[in-house]
Length: 150
Image 1 (tube, rainbow, N blue to C red):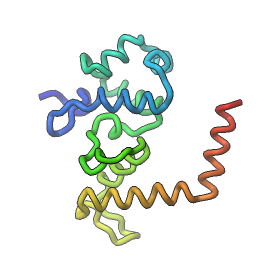
Image 2: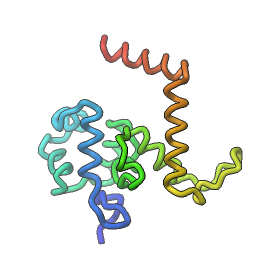
Image 3: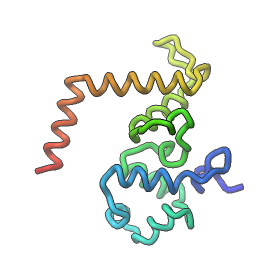
Image 4: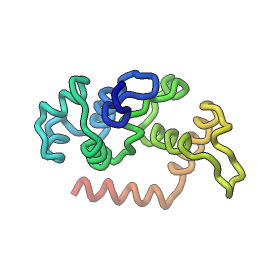
């Protein structure tokens, strides 16, 4: 069995890197060539990763996550079934994986490992709603959008 970090396989052996990479790249409004140029790779290499014909090594996986602004988990872990039924952003998927990786939050008195996936999704939904309604967060996002359009 291949190394899960190197190959893009999750614990169940299902290949997910190619699907997640393509989805996240498109959400970032990048072509395969754009992403390849950012990483100093060929467009063909990115295409092979997205087709599942080859996989980036661990170093390139880290570079991909940096260039795309997502966690490695978001690239290599499958979207839980409870999130597959709804349209989710990379942020929601990343929050879900971050929450799932947390064992206990002492300040909240919460043992995340005891929560089922549906409860984790509810927490992620609340976090996203809070972020969307926060004026400071909205100001930061507006500033980012303004600098990108200049």
